[in-house]
Amino acid sequence: MFEGTSDEKELAQIINNNYETLLTSLEPSNVLLGKLRSVAFVKDHIHSVKQQVTPDDKNDALLTALLEVPDDLQQSVMDGLIEALRSCDQDHVANVFRKESDRVPMSEEHREMLIKKTDEMCKFLDPENGLLKKLLSLRVITLVDHTRIRSRVGFEDKAEELLHTILRKSDDAFQSLANTLNESGQAHVAFILTGAGDRRPLCEEYRGKLREKRADVVRSIYPRDLMSTLISKGVFTSYDQQRVEGRQTNNEKVETMLDLISRKSQAAFDGFIDTLQRCYHEHVVQELMGPEVAARIKVEVNTSEGAVDVQRLEAEIRESMQRSFANNEAGARQVKEFLTSDGISVSDISDGSIIVKFRCRDHAALASMQQLLGSEKLDQLFTEAFQPKFAGKGVECLRVSIPAEEFQPHPELKLMTLKHHEALQSSVERLADKITVSDELLNKLALCKGRRQAVKEAATSEEQVKTLLDIVSRQPDCAFHHFLNALDDTDQKEAAACLRNTAEGAAATQSENTLTKESGKN
Image (cartoon, rainbow, N blue to C red; front, side):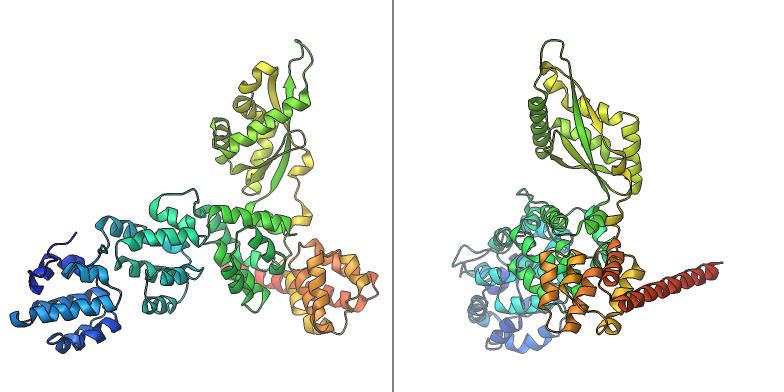
């Protein structure tokens, strides 16, 4: 990698032989330049070095100055330079001048890998998720590096600064970075860097959904419901929890959640969706992922050669299907390739005969699903993929059956409309003394234990009303009407009327705005 590490070679010759390596490996920190002020001749050039903007420019100015050191001072200047480098944890650079350890500058191979992957890594790398602390404790980066990286604003700027810092470190810093990524729950970023491991970053399709649906999702998630499950599933770390819970409002907390999820692995995103599904956020899942329909796969068998235990046979076929999709075997690949072009995927295969759930990207994909069912192409697809293995046991074909109601819109999964959401959010002050949050009211709303507890724990009656309205505003749209009915049933008709009037006023305003926009276009 570099030439000339013996004391017999003069300073200028070593620099000339290793100029490019030194240019890209030296870290011209203020600490290093400060220490070089005590080195004869060099101290007179420090001011001009510090005037340069980029690290490479500073290094070029410093190396140019070192090349001008008089012959009679070269040995003493080199000794001073080496001492300064070692005191600043730049032994890999000091070893270019005088080898005292195995630490060497970053290899060209590793430099190229880092540079090539920087853009993609910056989309996913999370420096604050314990990564910087671990790298600091391992002395891969210095305290000065740590402070400088953390001073950057935003995930991507911090990530870029970290990667640029690693580029100037010793070659073993490359592997240390990969190891630390794996240890800090960022194996998907290590995969981007090295290609090793089984964790993949979140695919661009779902990152796009998080961006596209962000506003609707932010106003529809109640974050308190999710955190403990996200942690227990390994989706979030304690660092993530601190960052989310450190925000003031629920909207801010959800914004932070989505920022974190978008930088995680595909497996973490799947865990996030599963958490939403389990924790009373099915309406958000449908908004993000599209509608899901459940089908039953019926097995038709030839009984001419004797009785067949159909129930046992179905169990065998189901287990075979589950293995095939889990391991991406030929049968599963055949089904996936056929359905993907229509925006359809197999989301689950579960017990209950053979139950297959299909996730449709949007309502157009749902319509395609219905057409495939009507044309019997789904029967043909599943028969070709999974029947041959069981033909010897009498299986003739597989029939896909989906009830008609599966294709109907699920009103209980429709997001709260903007007019209803804003009516609830904007009515807190007006309703603070008009709503009594009684057990009777809460019972009629059928809140889950966690949400009911959040309301009951609020310090004042006004805070209870505020918490309750916020919870209702994040539920499906049918919850708005249930809430009005509950108010009426508990003799709080004034509050119900206030909300109805507010919602009608919001609807009228939205209609006027729409007409104004349309007339402006015309």
